Image 1: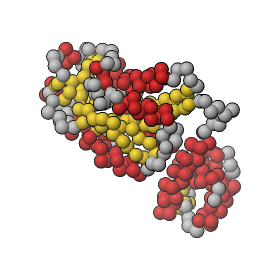
Image 2: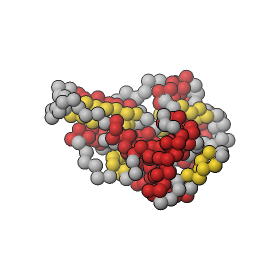
Image 3: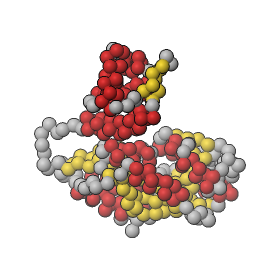
Image 4: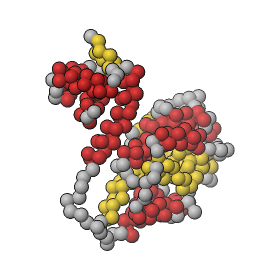
Length: 309
């Protein structure tokens, strides 16, 4: 079995046609068919059922493709690694995948300030929870920092375990509502808000809450369609913040109030803890099972723990 044959099988499955896959791979159709046939003979079972309408996976083929996808992801991850042109023992490097929370950015700056006179390289990746998990799983990032809403904690632990990723909790904060200065709720006194005040308001969230398990959070909190008939989903945290600033909409976040005692919050935005809410947001870090953290990674985590003590 060759890595080229694995890539060919995945391409055929993706295209649904040997002809289309051959074009994508810059191979002739006969040569691609022979290559896959040789692989099937080696494995002792058929991967594809061929017909005039294209190809479809056999039962064994589905199992093969599932495993092959993981192998290919790992291979491509290795191929992306770039060796330094010259070994430099003094260089310290850390790759992080983090959620776009302001105090996390502040911790990155603090780490930089502590090493500004040394040969430091920081690789920062920001994205959704799934993107952070994938970045750690692929080896692109040494550490991932993410929050998990408590109603979905058990589900997320299963997802992480399937990828051999460990989650270590740093702290836990109540769920809050975030609004912009255009919203009349922005000018309310106090730090808590009742869900009744959110009736008929537009709910704004990142795309990861548009479908799947996370999409049920508004309903879990009693903020379903009957309460919030309008919804806006964004692929960008900064775009979501801009929508909140300029409309009377709201979003759901886990706000670490202790961290923002010393760090300015997002300009033109304000949070209120959701009254009578039993759910929380668990903030933690993830890494691959058995992975030994670098000294920089441990130092960064120590900075984060200070925001929760």
